[in-house]
Length: 230
Length: 231
Image (cartoon, rainbow over the protein chains, first blue to last red):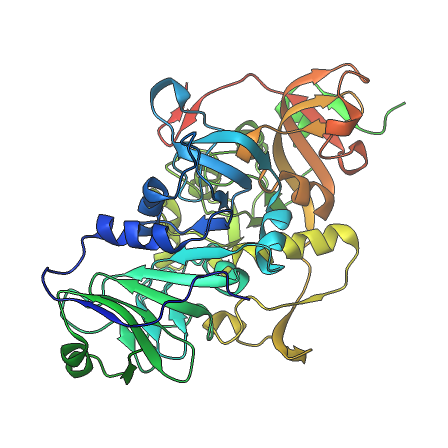
């Protein structure tokens, strides 16, 4: 199913600190194959749009899907380009690119659920080694539950990528043996992109592809999931 | 004689909506929200309503104004909590409104099923999550699914760009969102449109919602809405 590339050996970048979120967005954008149909989740993943591969005319070579009903979404709209009838899933005004198309909600989620979308990048509270995703609810009893399209996206795309920091503000790892937050989807994530490293999940072991500012040995100490290298 | 009524006012358009009705309300945030029909529904006075919509209101306009007026018993939606959903938040946290959260794709498909005469369907969305609770689980061809039932409306209030006098509709950009799905899923569908053109003026190839789904049409003046209100 996957359209992502494979790489042979684990790379450790120990001569620098962890990635900024913009640098991480660039790393993810580089891994998205040309010609893909891609959905970028609300929040940090929207940054990826700025780094997507372009052809020699400067046109993006991937087609962005927004679940409120559009393929061929362009950059955020400013000034006179703002149109109340044209927003993204985060309700931010956006623009349309040549070749864009519009469709209703049932069609928008049918193309997702039906396995037509190649890649989706989501934020997360937690990802488990087996690919379970928690990104919609903190589990706090006084929180108002709101799921939007998160559960549909989690099980819809051929490859679900997560973009997040590896550690929470309190230092606790977000790549975990088992999610303690309420689940969004079961075994749905294929790859986790973080400021400290990129991990393949959902297989028999978690495989480290690349690290920044930290080595695999230290990651093994700080994460409670067994890590493999290649 | 067209079966669709082309009406002069939004008050006529929402006439007869009974207390306790289930009303599907189009829109994704502000885009495609049938503001004028919702305002007319507030004037009309129907109460104890169940509202099915993607969100639970923004600011104090549209759906939020209906909620603030105390007319809504229950909201069925995918994403109630937003930066500007303070009207809903207060009602919910003080226990004055019921909430059923439905994943956005299931929400759309459940309404599509209602409009298409499907008794129920199996969806892979939400398997293994708290929203699977109480739902029938079935494995089909190696994949796990949940049984989902249709959501049918007594009324649908939707917004479109343009109608002809038969009630054929075209939409504009992402304001289309739930309109076509809700139009088919309600017993009585009421559309507010930017303009009503003579029958024959819409390109039949471009019609998105065919007139068979539309019962009442009313043209409204184009207004620009923000969460602060209209101008």
